[in-house]
Length: 181
Image (cartoon, rainbow, N blue to C red):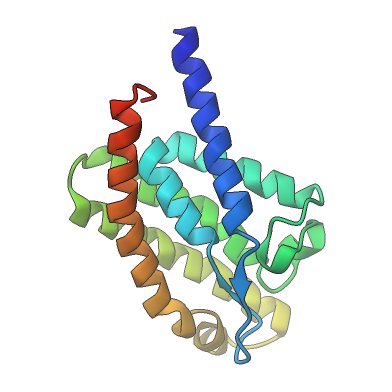
């Protein structure tokens, strides 16, 4: 029992660290206040490996680390101002993305098409939260926020989802084989 708890905490910490490494890596695009981020890829992989509860906990720890001032958010930023800024809605929306994607992963073991479905639905919820907050922060319409905060990212997010579904499945298989899950 103790070994299982230790390995679970280790995996949560490891996936938090992966998110802290991938999260700051972002590509600023001139048409949007929202950069291309690899945070969602890290979250997809985390929930693939850990499931919805532990994957969400991993992301919440990451969020707290960034909130506390460690520069783990996109473009090596951090702090409460980041959560209250134009991209804060996406950071909050990622909580629901982890929960929704992870739920599908837990509920439909071995069905990659359902993993992808859950990731897409979770991403749509993130887009809604992010666009709503971006519209409010930037004093623009929701439609305008969708055009700058979602449309440029759809293709890349689909690629990340497919990568995570297959890579996450392979990693989880190896972690199980090693006896950590």
